[in-house]
Image (cartoon, rainbow, N blue to C red; front, side, top):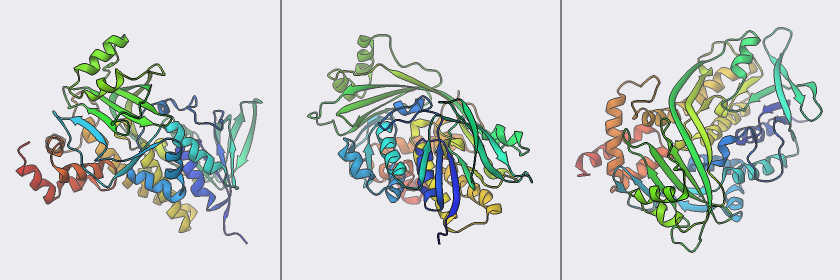
Amino acid sequence: MSNKRNHAIVLGCSLSGLLTAKVLSKHYQKVTIIEKDKVNNIPESRKGQPQTQHVHALVKSGLSILEEYFPDIKKDLVASGAVEMDLGDSSIFYSYGGLRERSNSDIDIVTMSRQLLEFLIRRYTLNISNIVLLDQMVFEKLNLTEDKQKIKGVSIRDTKNNMSFHTDGDLIIDTTGRGSRTPKLLDLIGFKAPENSTVKINVSYHSRIYKRDINDPRSDKIIVLKAEPPLEKVDAMLLPIEDDRWMLTIAGWHKTNPIPNSEKELLMMFKSWPHLDFYDILSNSTPVSEFITYKFPQSLRRHYEKLDEFPLGYLVLGDAVCSLNPVYGHGMTSAAFQAKELDKLLEKHIPENKLAKIYFKKISKIIDQCWLISTIEDFRYPETIGKRPKGIKLINRYMTRVHRVSIHNTLVRNTFLEVASLLKTPKTLFYPRVLWKLIRSNS
């Protein structure tokens, strides 16, 4: 006789939703994914996923979690044309007035499009026998039990046939992203919505695909230009992806539009940068798409961990809890950590009346780290709007020193990469061995 619970429902079929469904399939007899867009069996960016057409990074800690749940993911990514590399040795990285020296970091990374990654995860997940996907279904409302304490199911509308129906579940998880309607729906059913924290940054991302010459010795490298705040406001990254292509993403901070009006002006801009690899590569590469723009006005964190009451049978995960500035590449990895915490709690059979409180407290520790790394950098710009942490000016001066010394010092550089990859906590950068290197360096 199975010890599994009966039925779980996941709202959203992006990477967060798919990984959540995989976790739930271990603990529930049936898992249903509800997705508003049509889902095709190909690598794609759906209407509800405007950010997927830009550079994405899955740092080592996140990739390791995906490998726990999908052991073939790295092998299949590379077989599909993704590029595997060492982050320290394969990054041509210009920032704070210098080109970082390259050396092995033992931090491996795989670069690919978000579409390919999500396609493979979706294929693995939907091949699990007790997982069902219902696409083109709009989630409309939460349904309560008679005592109004538990979410017993959801009402959804089939957009293909314009028909509405209800489906019951023992646990419903919202993974619908930063546009999550959970706060409003909680208010409608008599529960308090969470407090929000926001950091307004007004970043826009502009991405384009180019053909990639695999004979170029830089074709398996990540090319980066990192702005030095507060005066510089343009970041750029050139990432090798599948099908022998480059993905170029240029980000403009605080409403800066970095994209010129013509191809000639674009190449002149690349030529003006101190990091000439962009010009050398892209002036000899053929673009195969136009620029696609995505605007990200602010990072948003919903503090579910601060709520005293929360309905039974319901949780929130991924960007629906915390939507981070994409420039730091932590969104997918944060979601992976959250899904793993959920897995641990379900394994322990935490009582239903305690699950939400424990879960939100656990994932808040993960989010704290991502939020801290993100906002410390965001607040280097005086235009950034939000609650500044205590001592932020001192911390930012310290981090400027870290950036400058990391150009030439291996220990500082690798420690910084470990923190950026969520392998170590930010406090590691303040350890005596790092501090001593910062003091002794002439950089």
